Length: 64
Image (tube, rainbow, N blue to C red; front, side):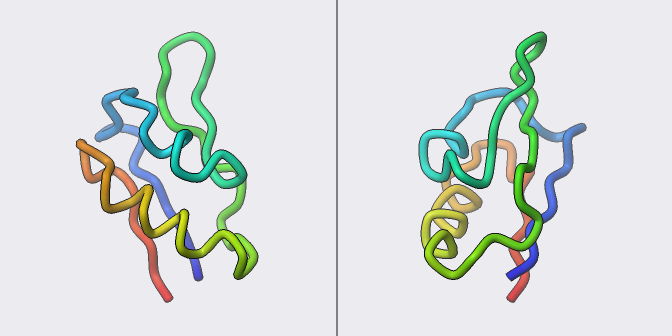
């Protein structure tokens, strides 16, 4: 799995952090997504996919 984020699309909702805190975080100053792991281990794949699906800005892309 490979994960990318488009910071310019991120609206800072934080849903990704709630779904997969091992993979995503937010910047302190503006709440924009921070990608912690571009290639998360298998145990985080489902949570990462869930985060991408619930992102209101569609700022997360997950590729197999």
